[in-house]
Length: 159
Image (cartoon, rainbow, N blue to C red):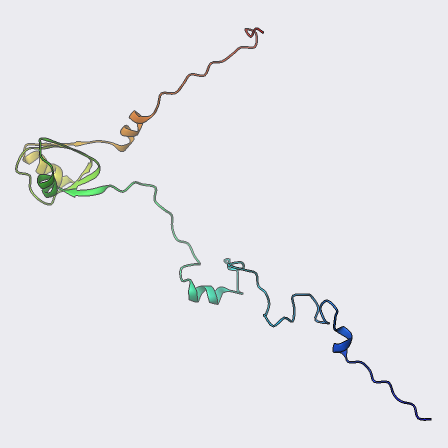
């Protein structure tokens, strides 16, 4: 009698139905490459895995970028514009810096946050006045008066 050799089942058929089919962790061998996080994960300073992509698509992502100034920038107005736009002897320009371009034909008193040196000279030469108003002083006027705290002593409490 001849012995028939039993055919060994293939590894693929033996592993079919198992969780990872012999490829280690669940996320491996999926055809997607290594999963390297989602979104911008892994794009920090020391990251090598996405550095080329980030450098190409987002220039300026790495490095220091200074700080945002908290100073309030003043609007600018020239003497010639004041002469044209405003009538009267007094002009109040809150949040403005007055520059010297143009001429003043009549004496005007100008209230502004700042003046250039030339602008001040021109205003005084025309017979007017250049008066600076401070930003901090205006804030102090708007503040509400503080309420006094009433302190109750434990001894004087009656029920």
